[in-house]
Image (cartoon, rainbow, N blue to C red; front, side, top):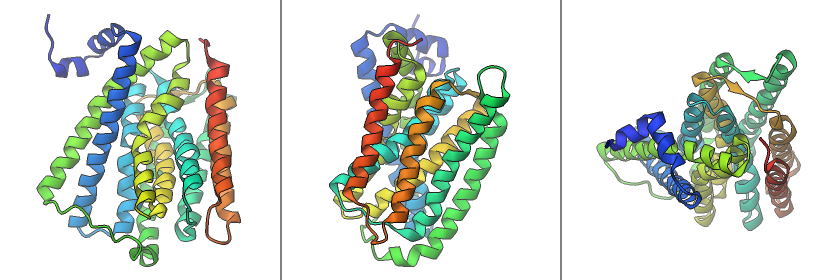
Length: 351
């Protein structure tokens, strides 16, 4: 019996049947292809959204602080919501937390090593505290759920709605902070924006969004199937391979901004993406379906996330000369690499 492409993507049973029939190399190839479409789709979506914003007269600093970060976290949001909706809470929560670790630990750490990164105190002393505060709130709520629950702790719909409300507050404040601090940044970004019509900008945004949705719909069951075959828990795969794949838009944004001489865009995007991964990605996933918190989040994921974020926050405080140091990037990257190694050595073969 033949089925259309839409049926394969929309029908959970058909999709799982299709994925289960792939050999190991086929699953790997599918994940690589999906990750590529994810990154390109998000890239198109960002370009289209930025062009739309410029057509409406929004300041460039606001676009960088909100729209770019929203665009680059769309893959994480779609992956986590799809995973939660289809009954993979470890994949949903692991992808959100793992993306925070990947964005700051890998992307910022690596860029800090290879380039001279400025400390923009006006924005970082505001959004930076939201970045750390949102992650700390997630951990505290999870610990409270662990203490008060009889079984496995759960992040319910109330937690998700609270995070989404905090997201709305953050976006409002980010716009306010960007407008106040925009004057000192305005002369630093002289790159020409794409000269597209409003219709072309909207079309590019929708095409990018479609690419993100379809590729995320495929990468979630592929990751879950691969995890089962390798004997690795779903949340471990989510917090490493899938999180890295969905963080590719942030990585490409970071490389491009550093190469063009605008490393401050990379810092702002990483901080904003961390906030959105917590409030938007995990908030939307918890709203779609309650998220159980697996035990190794308390021993691996959460500690690694807090060590990286609080190290980043401490470095902002200590760098009075206005620049991040290379050794600071090496420390944060070292924590990320140690986290990855421990995840696989301690969890390989676990059920």
